[in-house]
Length: 424
Ligand code: UD1
Image 1 (cartoon, rainbow, N blue to C red):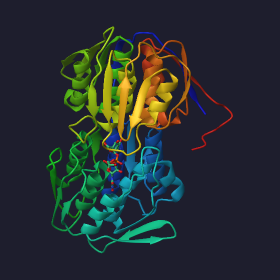
Image 2 (tube, helix red, strand yellow):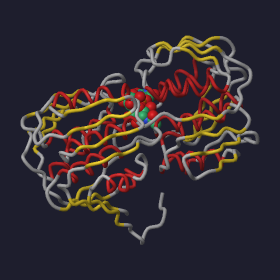
Image 3 (cartoon, protein in one colour):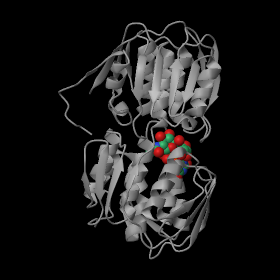
Image 4 (cartoon, rainbow, N blue to C red):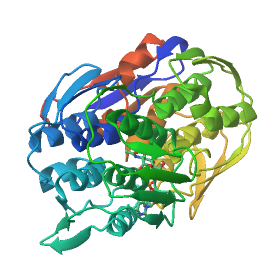
């Protein structure tokens, strides 16, 4: 498997441009299924997860073209509502196709998505919402089959503001008869981006970004051109990269409000930041303070930034307490950081991080996407050589990571394992 080899200690300097958001483009690509016709999606990051979504759409009968940041999807000839288990296994986000396929065909067949290293990740809230719209589900030989004659709008109260469940229900409800209200909806910026895309298709969705979303069903949806928002987690990762290397980096093409929670925490730790329209400059410091962080649904601190901040806080002057409130098993990077010299104790969903003067390069293993990013950051801030193994996790969510870091002066190379072809 590919590895990153990093020689730490180079302060990052220069400018970096942020790519389109993984978590926005995946539901938007799923939503292309709702309308019949040709859509052009712009600012698409070239990621493994996007490649899988394109493969799934192809498999459903869509025509998908483009390997750059522009993808054309023609869903006119879409004729299948079944996602094979082999593709479901490649990526959890295929679950986003449930709502759109049911809205288009009145039926869907998927295999039950499994858990993953960050938690069991059930889909009960997706199913609860779709059932409220009239869908009946049957489980047969490990497959989940949903069917409905006509979706009918309903009032849905989510027990937790799940991002995926909110998106799936929003997409299905666009074609339901009457009005759907989603209470306790997720408020993430990617939900707003999906609302904007759906409305461009001709849907009637309001309220995204608040905790109540209202969808008035329509009969037909079209196909349109659309530009995906920038990736706030990639931006946050570069904020930390600049800070942990005591560098000075201008991060461009961002929406500053989307990264406010992360920027506020870095400021609290003593890092200087200057925001100007759609860019932010990070001015690193020689030392920084420990802080306490708690992950929360948006606009709280994103769980997808928790691991990267743990790397940063491992090198703080004093103690930090990190509480993970979204996923039950998302602190596994602490073990790997400890191998680099970090002093971290785990108690339940809390990590107590006692800052150390230095981290030291060694061989570490990415256990999931953001844990992998955290290890790259730790390697950049460490003394000596760090080898990050299992970087296929990182390739799922960061476009050209090593190229972008190299341009900023990092010493990072990808070591490709030629003995393994695309095993995924
Ligand atoms: C999305 C993001 C992911 C991010 C997460 C939380 C995408 C592609 N992924 O994932 O990067 O970390 O939001 O911000 O957008 N839950 C249930 N039942 C459900 C659904 C969720 O119990 O039916 C639980 C989950 O197990 C988890 C919590 O709710 O503990 C949050 O999950 P959710 O917001 O749904 O995350 P995803 O949409 O899977």
